Image 1 (cartoon, rainbow, N blue to C red):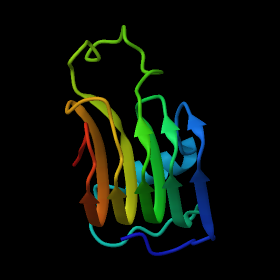
Image 2 (image 1 turned 45 degrees about the horizontal axis):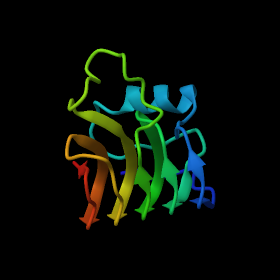
Image 3 (image 1 turned 30 degrees about the horizontal axis):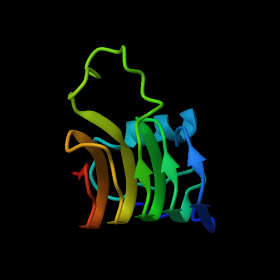
Image 4 (image 1 turned 90 degrees about the horizontal axis):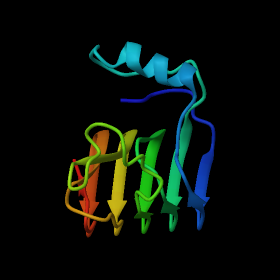
Length: 136
């Protein structure tokens, strides 16, 4: 459970994006707290709502963090993914990203193949009508 430091909403709508990322300090704080049990209280700022809607996301290995996450009608093209790296050969599973939240909703997103995986790290989540990708 993410329980503190809520600051408004971040809305990403109608963009063409190569990659979504969070800052190193927040990623390190999350990494240190992840093995423990119970609520995660961030000292850094965390958006109360993260709304990602109608974007074309070109790359892989995206990372987001918010209390309530809504990912809707995005297309994950993977065209900016490095083809020459180990484990990214044609047909290999590609991690589109890690979406971290207390609660998350994934509606009507599209990837480019069943080997595409969006990793959902949320206490509560729902997935509806996501095609050519897995949300797991």
